[in-house]
Amino acid sequence: MGSESAEASEYEQPVHEVRVECFRLGVTPVTQGQWQTVMGDNPAHFRRGSDHPVECVDLIDINIFLDKLRARTQRAYRLPTEREWEYAGRAGTTGDRYGDLDAIAWHDGNSGGTTQPVGRKQPNAFGLYDMLGNVYEWCADWFWQYPAIEPFNPWGRYDNDPEYAKVIRGGCFRAGAWAARAPWRYWQDPAERSMDVGFRLALDR
Image 1: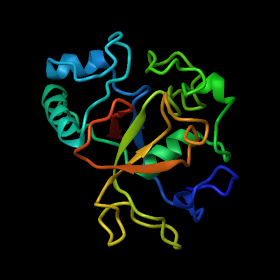
Image 2: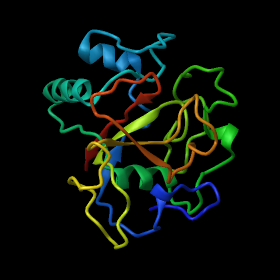
Image 3: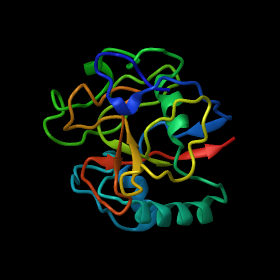
Image 4: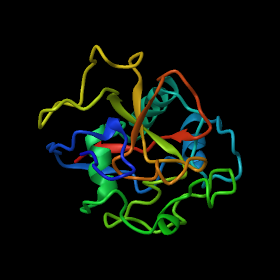
């Protein structure tokens, strides 16, 4: 995990190894149509079609969605951990991106200032779409600076957490190329709803 590229921030260092157990990840971010099927409403700011990613959802909203989805499917859906997200985002590559930026991601240079339908850009080698760009994605972990040890446990809270914020990943439609990178990471208040933050489902194998 992490990066030493010229675009990397201090939050992406030091580069370190982690262990990832077997898991499954949604092919796309959760869409407005999927959210509406489970929840019966649509909280998104950009309501331009059921195939657009749902956004304007905080961690409380997502936990309610997950509870209802688990009850409907009898499967233990959850948010991915940060290490799972980066592993899936890299898809076996070692660079910051798995392809040409415009071919794989919606960002501030090509999105027109709005979210776009999921699955329209090239997938990565794992067959996952929109891992970079379109909407930032919530992860299960609390945010902190990477410790200078490897491997480390991504769960828990640390004294230097900024207000115990949660990790977001992947870049978005109104961010530049600097965010549309697999190792990019930042934080958001778990009670904050933003029009550029959505999420993706994970499932233990």
